Length: 272
View (cartoon, rainbow, N blue to C red):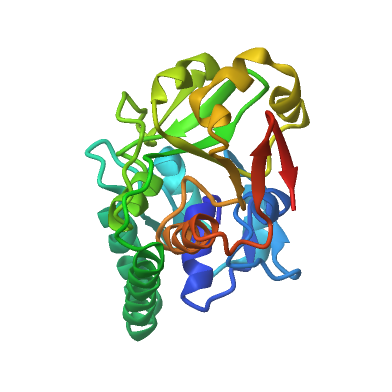
């Protein structure tokens, strides 16, 4: 598996992949579903190790359209299926569900696929109920890229789809890439008004200095109001499993139920 979104989907179906690219990165950035220790690391996500794949002899290979030019090379090793969550026409929520259903069908696990979709829907419904109908500030969901820039998620992302289904307003409605995000300098967040900012761990160490050292950061409206908090890692290019994990994390964070919470105090983030 060279795509972590497809890898987490496979694990959600109860199937352990024999090999996944960059297994260490999966454990840092995706986290759940957890990757068993026996899974073989097959190298970089963008550079398939065909010799290793041939030696492993998998039953089936799942790839995304980004690796479509190499389909013939993969197919010489094992039957190869292309599944997409992010496509030019958008709608990652629908595409993620379609990819899961297609994967379940290919593997003969239709019942498991239907049960997983039902579980994800129930998790999101429970999270929405836990958050409640009371008005809340719009949400900015970001990854810190360095001390000056964030990746911010809009309507075309799986994260934006989860916010919508939880009844939460996305504070960012600007342009996004094919993947549903934009990279902005933190100064652009000053226009976010009454928003609350939730950022995903892990973040670069240099970005942590932003919290304590940069006057611009301390002047941002959500910082002044103490509306900044951390979320656990969630894979932004994932599918239904990432959606479920985010829904749980948001409901815990917004109802002060998270054990790994972070609150703003005088411009500094303190983990409690």
